[in-house]
Length: 377
Ligand SMILES: *Cc1c(COP(=O)(O)O)cnc(C)c1O
Image 1 (tube, rainbow, N blue to C red):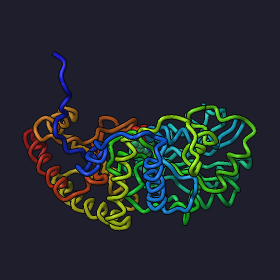
Image 2 (cartoon, rainbow, N blue to C red):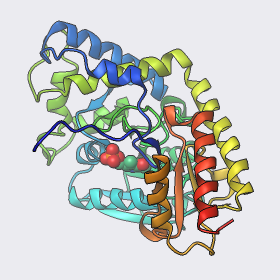
Image 3 (cartoon, rainbow, N blue to C red):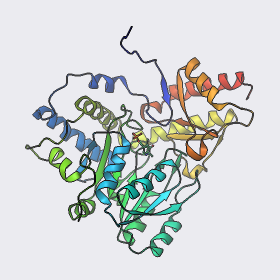
Image 4 (tube, rainbow, N blue to C red):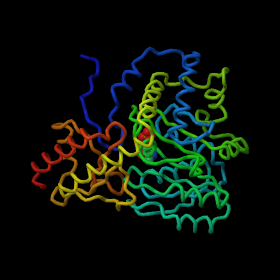
């Protein structure tokens, strides 16, 4: 017999989604209203203002794309890349690889700067790529590479791009709300994030923001954006038409209530306090993981507090069965390795509401229990 789906009660400490606070879930359960209702428009204006605060930007062109982080990524590339453009793409993990794929699908040429998985993007290599390719007009990189747990120096990379008259496009899906991120001060021209990582909202929305220089580049395009849905010239008539918003697509109304509530919680906590909480919980987790004999994959200065990649001990043969036990016995989800790190690491997330002492305690207790049963400690 078919019946309602009641999800199990999990603690989410993987690479996203993160734990969603009751407050956000309750906001999403409020009555649906029309997406052109003035009351909805008022809520959206607040949401955009809070997003600007989260990104630390004055950019007018700041709003949530109605789809997950990957759609924010495509929005940036679809609007900023034209056929024939040359783009420097930095790859040090899975998500940089997706950026290259995006550039090519938009008809651009990707000039790849490769760094080892687990290492940050090396600015000297980016500098060399610009020197060798004077036509490049866009630099793309991932600020917080979730596949490896690495933070790259976004400020330094944006400076290099601007020295070469290029714009800087940044993946901040995992960084927004979790670590220092300053869109205006660092000169980021296009940025996308996601609702389900350090914002602790369910998946499905992708905050984006564009500088005036990026908006000007988009307005001066010679060719139409290849995606109708993601074409900012159309989308903006919907999100920005003050008092006269015109229908483009039907916004996911209740999902927006959720993002509004999670941004309100961030606003109440204070952005810098949220960064500090992620850093503190990371220290607590790190001490416990090292006591269990687990080694971090990333060198200390480049580690993301919100995504802890640890190599599991050689004594453990079947890492997947341990993760399954964590889930089945302790209702705890942690992440597996991705791409080149598949089968080699665990990725323990401390994102948003998941960055709490209770979660760190649960994670360490559960790991100790399961690893002891597998005689790994
Ligand atoms: C999760 C993630 C994405 C993709 O976001 P989705 O919401 O899964 O589409 C992109 N980039 C990074 C760095 C991520 O961590």
